[in-house]
Image 1 (cartoon, rainbow, N blue to C red):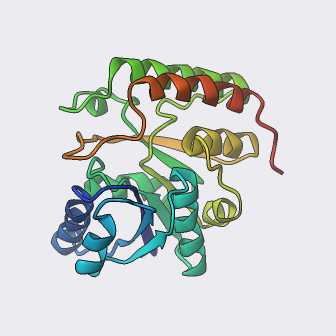
Image 2 (image 1 turned 120 degrees about the horizontal axis):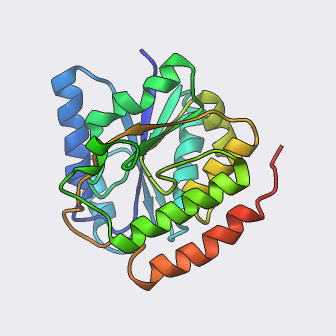
Length: 238
C-alpha cells in the first residue's frame, strides 16, 4: 500500500470543510482505505480555523492569505517531510469526489506518470455530470489547453483542474519549486517541458454547497489574460 496524502487548501471554507473531511472519513471506513489528509488554512477570515480546531482536523494555518499556490506548496513540503509516496491536491469546497482518488493515483502506481490530472473533459462520462462550469470558463480552459499545446507540444484537456496527484519525485520538485500564481497550468507546463510524464483520467465534480469560488465574473477574464503570456514565456527550470 502506497502512503498517500490528500492536500486540502482552504480559504474561507467554513461552510464546506467539515463536509469535505467527513466524505474522506466515510470513504476510508467503507472501503478500508487509509488516505491521510492535511488542510492548509490559508489565512481564512471566517470560521474555518474554529471548525478545524473544534473537530481536531489535521491542519496547517497561515497567518495571512498567500494564495492557492503557496497553500498547496505548504502541503507538498509536509508530504515530503513525512515521506508520503503520493500526494493528491483535493479542494476544500466539497466539489471533488474522494471515490476518484484511486483512479487518479493508478497511473502513479503503474509508474506511467509523474503527475495525473482528474479531468472533466477527456470522456463523455466526465462531461455528463449535474455540475458544469460556466461557458466562459470552459472557453478559457480550452484556450489555455491550446496555449500549453503550442508551448510544449502536449495536449492537456483540463489544465486548470485542482484535482491532481503526483509521485514522490514530483512531491520533491513541487516542495522546492511551485508557482504561486496560476499554479495548475503553470506547474503542468513546466513539468512537461522538463521531461515529466503527464496523464489525465476522467472524473466527475460536484457544485460547491456553499461559499464562493475565488475565480468568477471578471476575474475569469483577468485570469486568462495573465496566464496565457505566463505560459508562453515560461523558461525551463532545469
